[in-house]
Image (cartoon, rainbow, N blue to C red; front, top):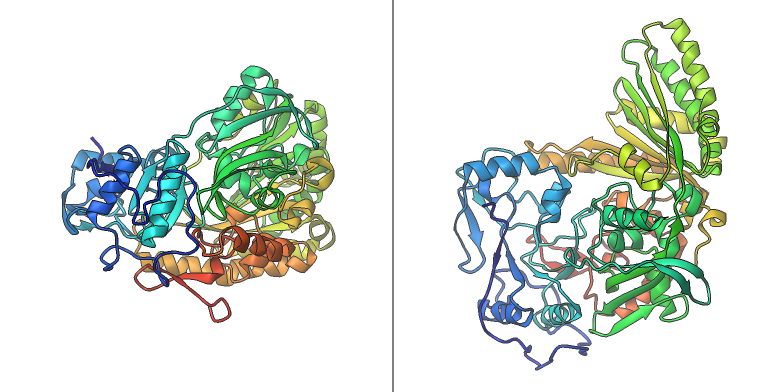
Length: 601
């Protein structure tokens, strides 16, 4: 059996050194000032204390054993502080290697993350390590398999009592390293799977209509399947295994219906959660208004609070029409002719989004595809008209180059979910390191030469590029009061550029590639679409090392967001990379999370 985690089951009660019991508690600051403790520090909790925590959460404390450990001769044992676990298993290792880039493999782990880089080169199973040692590295040290609010309160109390880093881990879909950390205690929310019956007539001062309430562990595909049976659909991500009520929705959350309905965060009605001091809240546009505003667009649960459930608007289902176009062009058309095609494609993006449409365009060496063009509630003929100028230009090139063989397929589906399942293939995880930029309409339409030159420069420099065409403007989004990045409202293209992550390369080589992306590609995209002209970056796809991350990810909202962070989490219990307030913390050379002065960072 694949060894993913050890469960500690020792019958020792935990009340905490201050005697706090389950429920709200009051810790104004961590017991120890300065850095969070890590294993082997003198103030790291004892095994007795960890066992007591385990008892307090009903035996659901998990001591991390990295998912790649079956590929290593020995693995670090947190109970002995040595590499005492004999973990090598040839068959199990082969299973791990085969599954390493499959999201489902990592979702089922309380510690494993999909973006391999942020594990800190710990226990990479791809290279031959049959005689090596597997350390925990940057994985969380322990995780509580959360079953209810009391588990969260006990975890928060323990972390603050012992000055241990705490974070939230759901599915592990995270390109920025926010759901893992050296020496951390994770609140693992993946098994919180309650989903309410459809609320057909939700009523508030701001909205009357259908809604749905889901817990933090519910995933996009589960929501789509559930609602389709009831004749409804919701705004969710393109990957079915993403946790909908977690970092996806709180960071904004784009979807195939974004140009018609807006972002996922625009539809939030209520958020239930727990603050760092253990107190509960239900945030709406009328209650805890600042928490509601902050969480509806400012980032993941675990920035100012733990969010256990979200209630959001849903919509009557509708048909989908669209197209798929594939174009292998290597060795046939010239580079100039190909980029002229791209220019034509870009001229069509405003009309596509104005029609409520969405499209993915993929750029790879010698190959271009639009997969899919996805337009809600229109006919196949109307959809075809949206890209006809592009097709006409292709036909002209085909007359010149008979070997040019593009393929265009049209489709129509009676429900959103049927179209979604047919048109969005399974995603692999951890295969690329990314940067991205939201490019506004005025730049796409008025600075065509600069757009073309920037895209071409990145492509020629080895970038694999994916652009998502969408526009969640205020008219279609109709948001309640939220903190969604303002750049979203004028966006036409969300461009993502990436380098392959080399599992067999050294950690240093992959770090160098990551730095190159920041220094060359992130900077080029920021020059093309600066914040002053409406540019920005979608939090869940942003460059985690962007030196201008506050401006790129949060824009003009940041001063208010930081004030709310200080109000509800004044001592920085919650930390995540590029999260609001994270500039006041930094990891030292050994991975401790320590106070930092952003003026000198």
